[in-house]
Amino acid sequence: MSTAAILSAPVASAPDDPGAGRTADGLTLTFAQAPAEIAESARTGHCRRPVLLKGSIRAVDLATGELATMYSTETERDGVLPVACGNRREAVCSPCSAVYKRDARQLVRAGLLGGKGIPGTVTGHPCVFATVTAPSFGPVHSSRKRGNTVLPCRPRRDHKDRRCPHGRDISCPLRHSDSDPRLGRALCPDCYDYDTAVLFNARAADLWRRFTAYLPRHLARRAGLSIKALRGLAAVRYVKVAEYQARGVVHSHAVIRLDAVGQDFQPPPAPFTADLLADSVRDAVQACRPRGVRLAGRPTGHPDLRHRAGHRRASRPPRRRAARHRPRAICTIRRQLHRQVRDQIARTHLDCRPGR
Ligand SMILES: [Zn+2]
Ligand SMILES: [Zn+2]
Ligand SMILES: [Zn+2]
Image 1 (tube, protein in one colour):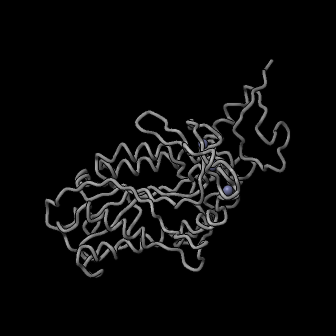
Image 2 (cartoon, rainbow, N blue to C red):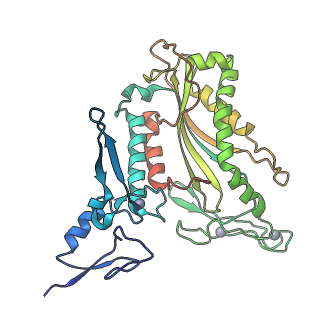
Image 3 (cartoon, rainbow, N blue to C red):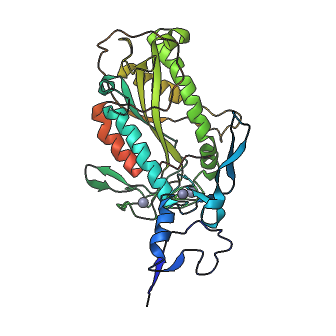
């Protein structure tokens, strides 16, 4: 007598028609059937929403002109080939998002420590770890720490007398834990500028695009070079993570590194230092403004820029090659920044980019 087992991972089946023994959430199987189903699910990395492909691959023999079928999904079970959806959002497909996170982590790690084609010498390149945050749209519950001590949210000695224009107390003496559902909520919903916050999120991707365009210009200006000369000397490379803060506003963390032009990861020439890069990042962030919409008279750049930087003078002369000026999403940072970024990547949902 066989005992039924429940597989939680859906198999490659049409969700609208689960079929006998199938449910929308899983599949009821005997123990004899389970290994085959598990093996089938493993083909897609246990993707929760596999894409079902149907078709064939045919090829022409150039010698004879014969058209032959090389592969057909008819040979697969149910006549379809399941392929992992590859979605980065954990809420959509946790197995695929986990693969993406691991891949991203390896990418960042290679940039930090070398490996996977990147030399270990990149740890000496000028590099900045920058966080760009939206302006305040109104007071919200928040959790700040000094060391391991959680500070009071928004203490006010005169909270009995001091009210917002709507008569509400906008102080909060509590020390919120990380799991407190009040974190990010507005202390006065009428004071909080929701419209501008929504517009800011809508513009976040554009702001970042502008930032990457502006950064080389500010870098060239601070180095006393023309943009053309900069393109012949240095290349900006970065990796960026966008995430939602508790208040629901997008902010970004980026590791930005300077290389010499070329693909061999050589250090940039001496005029380019981490301090110069940090100042240029700050300039570029301040210069970012969305086009078209004026958001309630507020500046919509990233006024809050925190960075940590270090630098080491280039030990080799730069190799001048063809200009490759546009920043590219290749990560490399200094060794001492490794832990910060690694922890950040571990905490961050890499799939939270707005508009993606
Ligand atoms: Zn998937
Ligand atoms: Zn609070
Ligand atoms: Zn108010």
